[in-house]
Length: 66
Image (cartoon, rainbow, N blue to C red; front, side, top):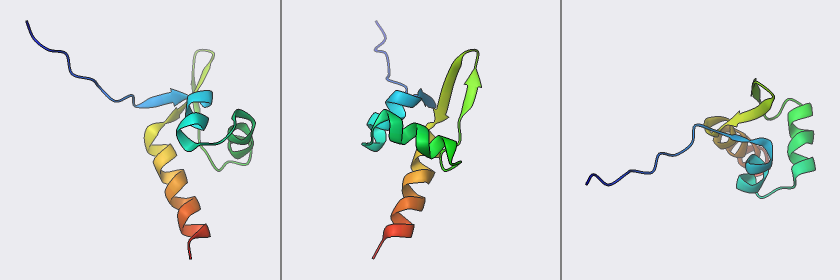
């Protein structure tokens, strides 16, 4: 029997994005409203690309780095 491989998700919902970033749901929506985190919709779900989360964190770290 073939063992299944875990595939990393390409995108996550807004609440999961907040958990990944370590911020609250409302803070996540604030960053989205400000255009700092880009999202897209599929049907009724708003999603965030994992690559967008990585880019967001890298931008914030660079802006606030010492």
